[in-house]
Length: 184
Image (cartoon, rainbow, N blue to C red; front, top):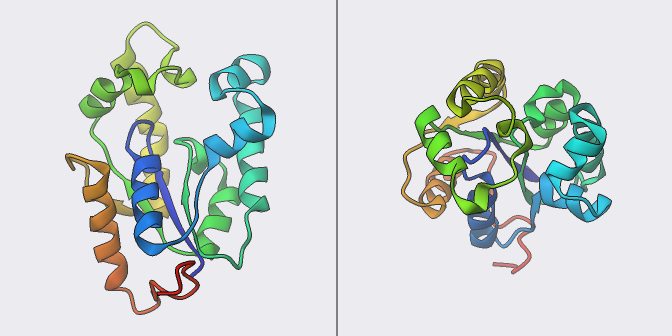
């Protein structure tokens, strides 16, 4: 099982949770948004403004395709990555996918924090909660289709990470130190 992938809506804690899991396992952590920014030299909101969402989704797919399929890694994805079935199929083949669930009100509260600024799809429309609702209606069936749900409400991403690690330890096909960089 080379990859552990995290999917979920914006502000669900995928990046922080992914880092926690990777640190625990001694595996590298990759974040699709960060890799896109590194590759293009543009921030996500700049890509959306200059080239649109479909271009960004193609970049996501290219990033996922470029990751080493034989390597143990933890992957945090962008909130809309589930919209591309081909990309999701790659994640599915590579290992378990966990859906970090978050309630609408929590997304609204988190989206107003400084670290969550510049979310291009949440900048559209006059009522932010309506925009969140519309995006969740579109994406939640896809999150549910592809990912094992991880309940929201954790006080910190470390807790979500520990919860996912506990779920992984119950899997017969999970060997946490197979390929770990620290050799433990």
